[in-house]
Image (cartoon, rainbow, N blue to C red; front, side, top):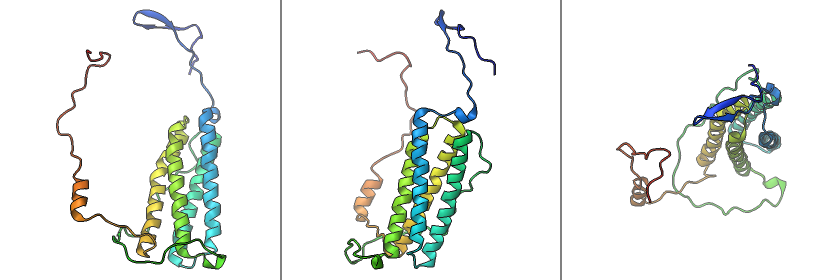
Length: 222
């Protein structure tokens, strides 16, 4: 693309206005300052989750939870490599991440059953699958929130898409861990009485008529 001369002009309301030159930058330099800081936070966050998952694995007893951890670990690792590559090159990565597919069925058990009050562990021997699955859920949810916050700040279009496309996968992973916890009564879900639930779920209505927008550039008369 040919760069425009610095003294080029464009007409705005029949007035000649100076036009800023069009600058082209190589893909590897196509990053804004805010984006750079956010990407360091994102990549460091991914490393933190991966390292924590590796530590967690030594404590797990339930093979189902081990399988969840392993599948999520390798998905996050692949996404980390893709994001790291795209961040360095600024161009399309060598391969595209596949959507995360959970194995848990989406059957939620509602209601509260009596259980022992929770308290901090007094020794390593008290570390159990219940606590580890809770830590896993917190880490994945935090990473999903971090990606959702950082992605709108990314100026590189390829990197922005790499991050944006992955957010539903982290939501899916968090939901998978929640379903595992719910099945084992680690994460119980209370419900409101039916009448109150109906009041809440019917508290909003769809808009049927077309909105009547005011003319642009014409503020309403005082």
